[in-house]
Length: 148
Image (cartoon, rainbow, N blue to C red; front, side, top):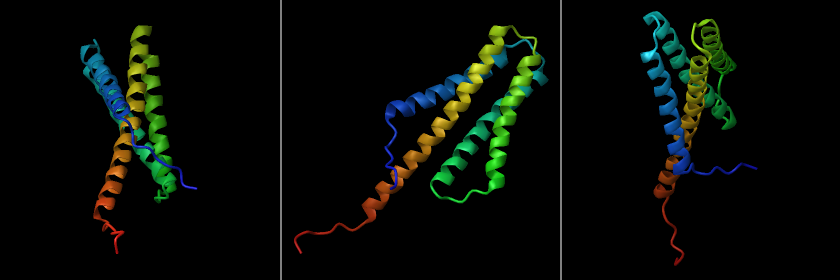
């Protein structure tokens, strides 16, 4: 039995994009305004980019496997390792930072919100592409005439 998929609603798509923008822009704005050295800002920015990319990559690998699309064990494992490494690097950076607890909390929440939203946006993009492909396939199929 194949599970039925529903097209994502406009509200969920909008909420996913807003969460991604708010989380990412909040994190970057915090870095921009932070009183830290440029190399520290670069560290946190790089961890953000690694986290966003690896979370989308992991979501794609998981989804590919569910849909029967071949994904090598190496790629699947590397995706998990990259997500784990990005979160670990953020935790280590925040643990050793001289920020206030509220600043550390802000960066952690903005980071996790960005990762979650990136996965949701990727899911929506993939679902919409799937529904678009189905619509195009239905349009290309010749209509049968019941009068013959």
